[in-house]
Length: 292
Image 1 (cartoon, rainbow, N blue to C red):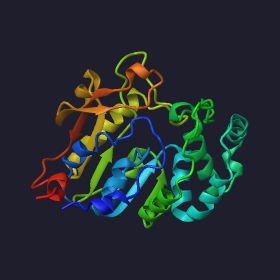
Image 2 (cartoon, rainbow, N blue to C red):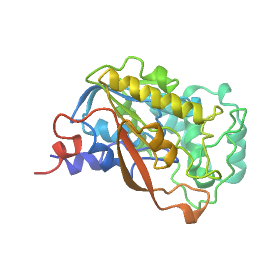
Image 3 (cartoon, rainbow, N blue to C red):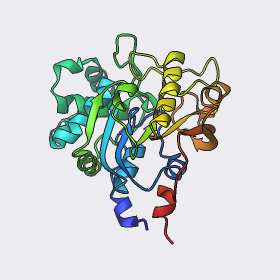
């Protein structure tokens, strides 16, 4: 059975992230086994799935990865020295001049807690909570127009730090991140989505765009994991290209609400595709933890 008090005090994502999975969590949890040895999440983003699984004690160990170095620095800073991250954030004012001053800082010249605080500050105060970089890998989202953004949530950052203790966090390509996965492990892939139209493509979370070649490489990796008897679950846009890439797998279309989009009229329920490598032998994580 679930514990409402425990879930109310569980760590939740500390960053806003395009494509975040909080809305899709029930569908994801209903397609995972009740537990696993090692959990892999190679497209970490906001980490909504990881935090939900950590609350449920789903894994013995976890390996989290992403190609975005600033994102990974934020997780490492919170895991390793959350109190210094909190102190740095507490000194950052919410105004336009401070925003552009902090945005202009070269993160390579900062220590890890300061780099983590910078990422959180920019994410919480920039336009629409987007994380976007230019071809040089520099964050280039303009100042947002929030009146009172919640830049610092001390309690949640400390909960996040506790959830990350003992977790392996890597700056790595998705294929490298899951190279050691074996039967009994679970992998969740949440890549930059295949565009739903020619004008809707947005994969600039890091300086290396995630294009058709990467989508094909990921589909081939899903086949490899299936052959190794590793349970892998993937989410992506429910479009013809994605269905073609994964036509040999079990597919299911689900609806999820999207809150981050540059056009308000495009924020709403959209169709997404879930793909998985193996059939569950028994109950799912969702069904096994539901109140009887």
